[in-house]
Length: 125
Image (cartoon, rainbow, N blue to C red; front, side, top):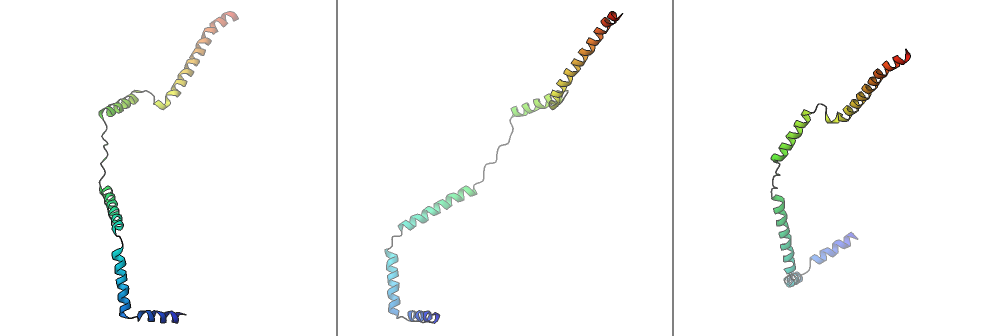
């Protein structure tokens, strides 16, 4: 099988020069007759796209402007000063309120006990 293929290739290669010239002319006629304009437009469009992509990829991005305004600085400074002026941290403010209410209740109870004690003493006598 392989030897038959080899023999057919050798036979095709040993054709006369006139055959090869006619093949060459046929190829040239086909190539010259073909309309190359759509292919030129395709190449032109591809090159334009490559150029646009190159422009976008090589352009340096603008540096972000991270300059805080004076108003933001003043607001931050006021917030810090307010935090420093507090006696108790903001997170503990609810606990302080609870403790103050508890102390108030306890002092009221102690005051009531001290008031009622002399009356009771009088009643007991």
